[in-house]
Amino acid sequence: IGAGCIGASISEILVRAGIYSLSIADSDIFKVGNLSRHTLNLNSIGSNKCTSLCSHLNTITPHAEIKPITNQLLLTSDSAVPHTNIDIECFDIIIDCTGEDSVLNTLSSIELKHPHYLISVSVGFGARKLYINMQNNTRYNFDNFYEFILPYTKDDLRDINESTLPRDGIGCWHPTFPARSDDIWMAAAVSVKNIEKYINTGQSKQISLVYEQKENDYYESYSLIDKCECD
Image (cartoon, rainbow, N blue to C red; front, side):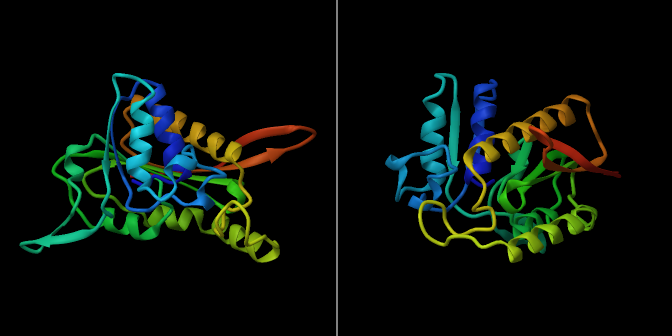
């Protein structure tokens, strides 16, 4: 869910790793400001992000079957039982890459017939921090996740307020504007490694992770700085 820079990078890693059956949901249009960090290029400007991304991913291998879902994830009701307009039940793994609380709130409002893996990936200001939440359940709850990351997101807000950022040029005005494509690719790679480990080890607990970019004498990549497990 989400065909932005993080979603695009994660999906490409998955396809190149042999995950050929994917559906990507996003209703946004690809704009000039997206070029600095996205895997798409000038040919996709003005087109739906997810349609263009699926076309790109399907050219990576003849085995790929990447399908677009061009409508937004919405909560609807049927006989007073909440459900989404996208059939979440038919997917083994759901990866949220939107960074939007509204999407997590929608997902937490539904009850699935069988447990499904749900992973949420987002980055903070400048992609200096990476936030990952992983669950495997029929109902999703993000209360512990929100509480866990609150001190770190407050740090992000302080950094935003203390920084002077340009508002023009390539790169749309967004809290992660200072992040370059290499920051996003590293965040995506770390995320995929954790998704793989979480699923392969058959985890049932909810796990939240916070990574931070570290630099001493030389650059040290992302380092895990905090972890939370709960039932």
